[in-house]
Amino acid sequence: MLDGLRKDIEKLISLYEAEKAERVRLQSLLAESKAENEACKKQIGDLEQQVNNLQLSEAFGAGGDRAGAKEKIERLIKEIDKCISLLDK
Image (cartoon, rainbow, N blue to C red; front, side, top):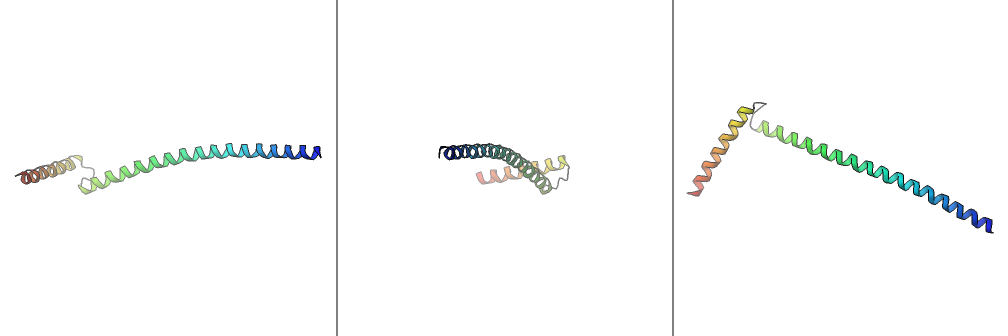
């Protein structure tokens, strides 16, 4: 009877240790997944910024011509300033 109880306790301890090791492994895997997720989120943010920049460049027809884009932006700002001054009158 005591031997059976001892074997059951040893079996429980063994199962506990196995579950404990599995928990540590899963926590490590979770930490790696979280880090990978954050890296992917950062990459997505960077790519979205690049897309926005390209869309903005295309909207102004810059096509890589920074000076032309700058001139268009300056013209738009002047037009907006004129509109604001007309609204103030």
